Length: 279
Image (cartoon, rainbow, N blue to C red):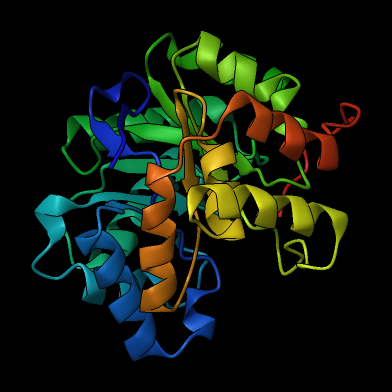
């Protein structure tokens, strides 16, 4: 499994991890089994959030006895992100997860509470050992600049953003910003949101052709593309153990320049949007 430095944390994390948004829509036993199968296969970066319903409790069950193997991430909602609110949200997440610490704690998206207070709350938690690092999610470049000005360099561990073949907007400015500032870029919903290219579509056919050359699957090719750059990570969600193993197998796919060109011809970058897309 390709291990990469997670921003400035110094921690090596697999390029492909596991997301949990809407995981509680799956059968609970299957969801737990899928997470465990993923961890066993090397997908030890597990991401969740307080707003994901029962997902934190499912993750807690899945990683019981495996905590030392997992890089565990959760997120606080902006409405809870006052200095004291961050602490309360973290304690509640820790309880649901059945652990005494998070490896990284994120602000889920920019909100109305002063960012200075949120970051101060994160730093309080870090000093107390409740979290080992903190990061952001759904932040565009102006918001990232502001966070950097408040926190200083080498404090923001990651920025988690929407990133899939049909939505490459972060490549315009967010991805370069993260690479320049030593911030890990974590792509969520790497297969889209129920709109992965069908086998009969032009894009689906290209993915199938590339997959055939590598003895892989179209989903695996998508993951390989999205994590091809150093400092980039992806967190696909699945409630099926066999799909977790398929996601892990994508780590071995080494796309050629021709593969990348063929993929980008079918899934062009497009113009930079005025606002950062998010789900």
